[in-house]
Structure formats: C-alpha cells, structure tokens
Image (tube, rainbow, N blue to C red; front, top):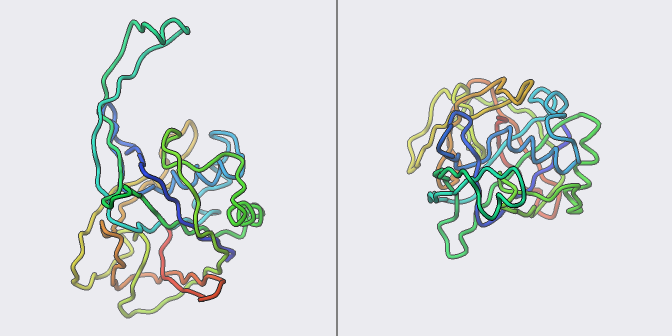
Length: 244
C-alpha cells in the first residue's frame, strides 16, 4: 500500500475522551478519529463531511508515542456569550477541569509518529502536502488552541507480514490482536478509544488499545500478523506496526 509517515509535535496536547462529560479528560495519545480529522484538515475537507471517505476501511492509521508524557489539569471558565457585550460581562459561566498532555523534558515537548496507508485517490495529494508542509489548515494537537507542527515526513511502503514468533511492534496495538507479551520493563497502558464516527459525530466503532507510556516497542506474539513500514531515504529504516 502507498504510505506516508510523519511526526506530529507540539508543547501541549488534548485528546478528549469520548465518554467524558463535565470534565474534559484526555487520552495520552491521539485516537484514530483525531488523526482522521487531522488528515481531513490537511486536505481541506469540511467538518463532518469525511467520515465515510476516511473510514477505517479506506484509510489505515497507526500511532506511535515517541516519548514519555505527563498530564496536568487546569480549570477553565466557559462563558455563554450571545453578543459582544457578553464577552466583557457574561451572565453565565461554568468552571470545567481540563486535562493537558505535556512532555517530561525541559522543552515540555510532545511527539507522536503517525503512519498513514491507503490506495484511495486522495493519497497522492496527502503525500505531497505532508512532504512539502503545505496544508489547507495547520496541524493542531487535538484542539485548535494547541498548535502543532509536522516533522520528518517521509514516503514509505507498507506491507503485510505474518510471522508466528515474538515481534517488536512500534505502534499502539489493538488488545484483541495480542496473543502474548514478552515480559519487559514496560509501563503498559490500556485505553478505550474511538475508531470510526457515524452520522451526527456519533461513535460508530471503538476498541481497546495497549501501548507503553514511554513509547518503547512492545515484544509481542500476535494472532493475525502485522505490517512492515519501509521508509524511503538514506537509511531505508523499517518498523513493524498495527493499524488502529
């Protein structure tokens, strides 16, 4: 399959958990639906217009956490403003806890590697826009006021592989695909994340995903194989992934 891989980076991120209501809790990495929306923004698709075109059957997405992160919680004041004057003196406001993902280093850097594969017609345009950093809408880290950047974009080929031995997997892994995990110094996290949206932005599919909090590769025995990512460049680097 045609593929492209890039790093999404920024200082802060927020990927809202779909089952939260009054408190805005965040995943520690972007769910598939968030990356789907990011790709739609790069291509200039209108909001809520792309769920079928970029569904999991047509657009394959994998995510790797590049580094250890931490979360902090701030309280935000949400106001009800029905006119410009209400911005200065609102009648109503609500305080909402808001979870923010940031880095553990001095730069407070957050970084994720995104793998995209598809045989659909939009793939050529997407590859060109990522390689040349030319987007219809700029990248963000889950919400528009946390701006991000695209780094290290590279065209690649993504090929299926089926080996029954233990294999190192770089990306987030669907829990149902794991037969066994080799013991290691992992900080394993399991999160329930959305996979596809349906009409009216309702969650159509969701799943449980396993990853290491520090972004280390997991050595796994899998039930149904995996995919090999071969990057084109000076090193011809290869990685093993599973799609979300």
